[in-house]
Amino acid sequence: MRIPLIAGNWKMNTTVAEAEKLASSLRDILDKIEGIEKVLCPPFISLTTLSEVLQGSSVKLGAQNMYFEARGAYTGEISPLMLKGLVEFVILGHSERRSYFGETDELVNKKVQVALDFGLKPILCVGERLEENEAGKTEQVITRQLKGSLANIEPGIDLVIAYEPIWAIGTGKAADGITAATTIKFIRDTLANLWDSDAAQKVRLLYGGSVTGNNIAEFVSQPEIDGALVGGASLKTNEFSSIVGQSVAIKRQGT
Ligand code: 13P
Image (cartoon, rainbow, N blue to C red):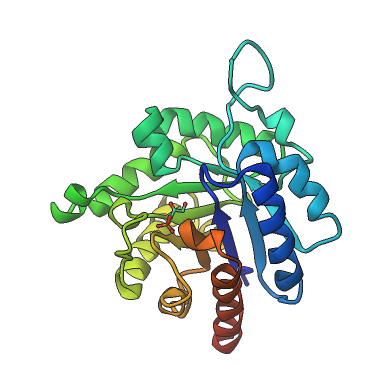
């Protein structure tokens, strides 16, 4: 059985003081919800403060990005060595990193490899652009991203993959549950081809893109979808707690 997971990607939002306040209020509510992994991914500069806020809590921390070298002359970058012990998860290959900062599958692949070497769990993001979707190229794009980002990665790893169609991110136009589940099943089949079916079954597959408390049920009621990577709605205590609460309730009904 895969444990459901809801992760909040705060992106470039919250000052340290705001992050501390948001994490404290989330902690108090989310600690009462069991049977699901809850992960907050604040900006780098809030990680130390939040690791103190979340001490003894079941709420976990993730980073939003990471460089692939452990140390050195890489001005402005954050290394896996710095993140080790501070976070359990790291988001890699988010579409905003790919489109605004030129990240390629090859670069993401290096980051995935190094994250695993340092004992960090990658949340690898894949997803197609609107024009690729409209041209019927979703599966082609996702196959390329998976093969590229997971090249030479051994099967059996503790990996999370988020399917985030770019046209659904921050637009208020989420994919519908069935479409998301179809693509997510395709991702699992691709992993089974790349590795083997056992290794593919271990990977948690999330949906991301305009997830809210109003539509989360549509996604997590699909057996193929193990949870969600939430952007905007993860910045609101009530909304994010509702997403987590509904997810665990629905997944419990399904077992
Ligand atoms: P929104 O939930 O704001 O659409 O963002 C999704 C996302 O990019 C999470 O990584």
